[in-house]
Image: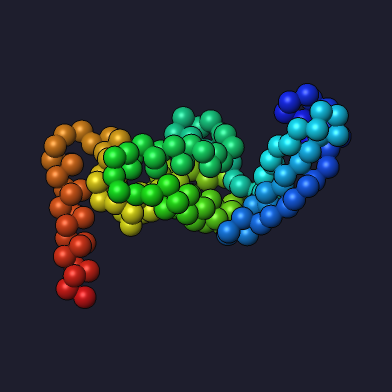
Length: 157
């Protein structure tokens, strides 16, 4: 591990702790050259599928792209950062567990929309309007009506 301050590669671990969800290890390190301390995080690298974009390009699955999209959809909404992180964890786990080597970007979009539907209706509509490229107000209204009908159905149960 390279020291971020002096670039020296020898250091030692002072303290190691598991995160609350026990998926990440936090390590406090001290550089053997300059003596400064820094923190590193270790996460198990699991094989995630490649994403096939609409235009046929393939790119690596990117957790941060999903988180960024969720944050934009939930901007100025009462959704906590922790709730967004948990949603990204569920999305990532779903595709890790699928065992697929490649997935369509549209599959990811649908899973994201399902997560947003559970988190916040307004965030869901925001994301859906961009993701599904609503052409006019009628498409927008249909989506809102479907949400309302779904809520009404759950209230009746």
